[in-house]
Length: 553
Image 1 (cartoon, helix red, strand yellow):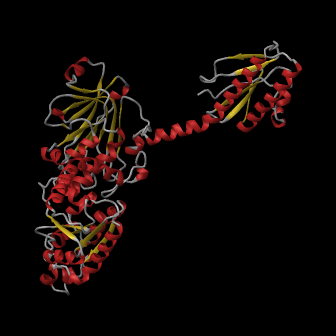
Image 2 (cartoon, rainbow, N blue to C red; image 1 turned 30 degrees about the vertical axis):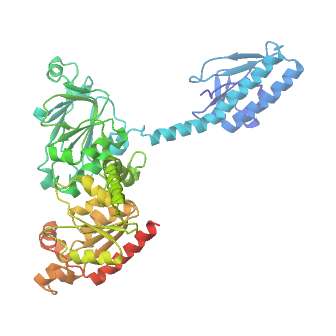
Image 3 (cartoon, rainbow, N blue to C red; image 1 turned 135 degrees about the horizontal axis):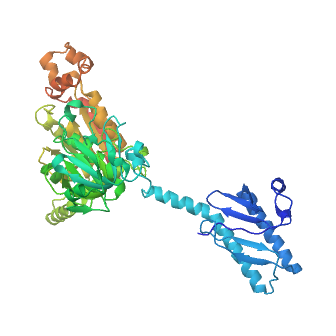
């Protein structure tokens, strides 16, 4: 948009506070406006004086008034149009030739007025364009993924190791894999090739040494793009010259659904969402079952099949690479750290897109079958799902809880997920439910499948208060769930009958949990079951029922 121009003016039209800065001379002046600075400039005999935009427009207005006066008096004017001012169109006016045609005079006024309007509106236009650019993710992603690497040059490897939970390295340029040596090469003709290689373990539990020792390490190495030997030995077998790659590990605690989401799936969303699916996932310590289990989600984050880094010996080539994943907090997405201010609700939308198309048809078929047979109830009942556990932290009187919930008015489903349960099945149950209840444990991760404003009641055994609130309670609130943490009384714990009410394990759990995670795990996680006091639990259950009725009105 043209928004920069100049108009010749007489010295008397310049505001008094700017006249002092100019030489007294009869030469014509030029007036330039620019949307880049929000100022205009007077040009005079090789000198440039900047003035604010408001004064600049005042001068232009005065010049237009004077121009009409000159036309009436028959003075001679000359109009010339030149290219300049970074692609805009300057206009200069000086006294030389008489414009005899009234048509030319009118066209001149219209033309200059048009340019003035362009100038005025260009500020808002560019502001809008800039706003849309930020929203669409056109800002450098490094600023959010690896701040220390923001703005680094092409042909460079940069690692940001300031994060407590993970390291992230970014490779800009000709990136090629070499799985045989656990390496990723960056081919460059720059002097950077003489720098030392970087090493990284692409897993998001950097602070926990014991588990990080089990994660495969990668070498990020510079290679000379002009070296024929290196080029010939690393010819691209599969080339994604216009697509970046994200390298990450599915080692560590993979196998536990909480860790799979917390250290894998959610960080993968955080790290890759701004690519709008134009990204390839390269998986270190590739597990077929993991790719099968999370395939529906992966397909919402990438248009390309994931690559088995160690198992696929071919050389893959990419335009850029991010090695490692960005993690924010427990099962959380922090908007201020995201391009476009994405939230955990945006991640929840990814889950909807991943699973809803698969189950929507099944639900319709079942509803039609129920309508035909007349087995479908016309009376609305809020749906309650109980996430059942076996072994430790088992709900021993689960059957009585089901009876109580049905008496209150719930339609109850007991869900017993295991490692082989398809996520779409769990999503189907929870996405259509009004309340989820479960004893603290990894299965509580499935609260991510609940719709915002539904109810999540977490039963909290002795000694697990901190973990229950940190890992599930607080993240559930960020998802806008109605959360209740039900802390059991000592008599509701099986440990009470094993140790007695006066034992410190029952009387003062914090004295043991302060000793470290191993004490918490061995006593309170692995050896404790729960028998609910249904009279006490009836209060939060009734509250959940009332809220569900209100929400569905």
